[in-house]
Amino acid sequence: MSLIPEVKCRRCGERFSSLRSRCPNCGTRRVTQSSRTPGATPGTVSGTASYERAGSNTRWQMIFGLILVVAVILAVIVMVSTSLNSTDVSTRTTPAIAPTLVPEQPSVEPVPTPTPTPPPTVEVLQIRYNDDERTDITMSPGEVVPLNAYVSPLTITDKVKWSIDDPDEEYFTITVDPEDGNKISIECLKYREAVSKLTIELFGKKVECDIHTRRA
Image (cartoon, rainbow, N blue to C red; front, side, top):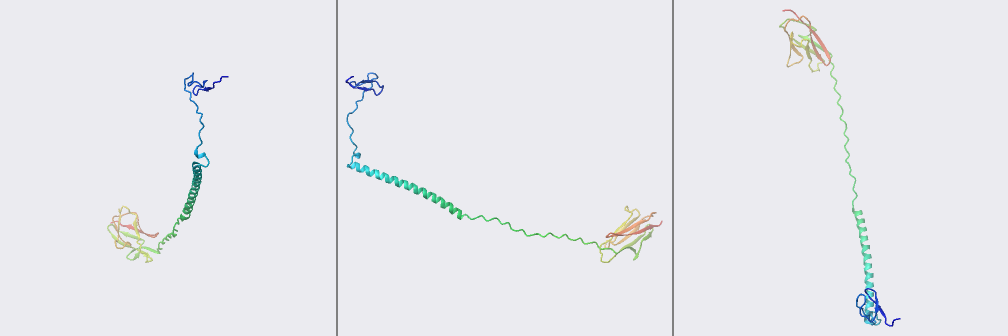
């Protein structure tokens, strides 16, 4: 066993004699460990002013930490309470939306369909010449005969419709009185072998008169 203690290189780990100042392997300088014992810190020595101050600082740190925790808890409680109150107030103050009321539409009664007035009943309808009823007339070419229509009852003011079976006015012409539609003048233009039919009509009632012609 060697009497000289060995040390271990702090760089390469080679062990060498403590008498050497450098590692023979890598040349790293050996660091001599101090044999001094470190003194105690004043703050850790009981009875000193530093120890009293250290204790006082520790208590104040604990008190400050406790106050900080309580303040955080109170802040959270206040925030939650404020949020709940604002929600409750908004719920209470928001007016309920009233349903839209549709105005009642007035009932419109249907307009009654007017009942058509029935046409008057013609009791008497005649073709007359000089106030005499005529059912036939004989005319010569160039002759003009005044005729009129008689209607009963007299309350009927509508005028009759005149017509003759001579649409081209080849044998006769009819001239209606502009002041009284129930009066006409019929003129014979030329001889006709066939008998012509003069007709008046009013409200469905019809009367005919035969027109004969004689040779000139």
